[in-house]
Image 1: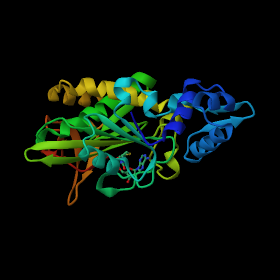
Image 2: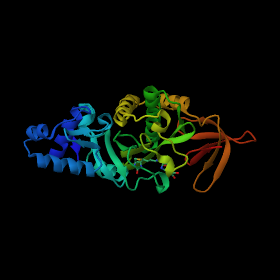
Image 3: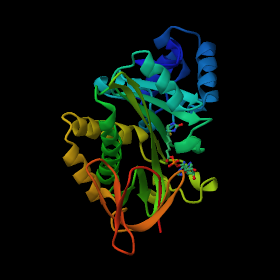
Image 4: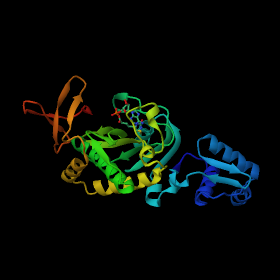
Length: 315
Ligand code: BT5
């Protein structure tokens, strides 16, 4: 288990978590942990200050929304050992990069409750306040760089399928990697890779999903699950479901199947699109995504063009 919380704070949180939203008295905590009630109070205060939502009442302490907690001990043991949880980070991408270089295992997950410098592609700002699901998945698949793209497609496919299964929502994937809900941006993916020789050393896939937050204040074109479902949902359930689906998707890896299933989930094919690359703008009807993940668009003369990267706008 990997957790930034020092042992006692973690043990307090674990007790509150196991109480499943009921109140645990200060006496019970002080007996269980063999510390004074004042010490319990001090640790709880520090936990609250770090952003953990704990309610204090005359009878004791109670964890709000325990199902939403993302600390390692909340997960199944096979997942727990790979979870790196932080209350706040600049960006999970930076921490994941450090951890990937320091031998973090394949399928490690770096989570932050808040990111102060969350980023999108081309260093664009990613709004990542409390309530969203902000994490980076570290992959060490032992693959050559030209095949790395398939992991991004597998990730957006697994996310989309998981959300549909859990909440029956009308999510679609937008090429190359956004998730849309009701035409608005629910989630974005960002991948970074490092190679050594002819092989990938690690691929880090950063996923930002608006879950219980309200991103519209800063991003009018964004939407969260809570906005649509009108209730708070468990980020832990989403993450666990996604990880299970993703593991099945990549072990064994079947590129044809991933692209085929991805195409069934996309709202890009069949849409009029504008693609902006660093130097060019292309417009046309999106007609396909090929085996390499390139978008095929057709212009008004019927000519087709393959585009391998860029920002895609459905027009
Ligand atoms: C992305 O970039 O969509 C990739 C976002 C990846 C974020 C995750 S969070 C965990 C990990 N740690 C990080 O620091 N990053 C990753 P891009 O396609 O460039 O889209 C960025 C654009 O999305 C911005 O310019 C805004 O217009 C918009 N945006 C920013 N915050 C948003 C939000 N919370 N929800 C929806 N749209 C947002």
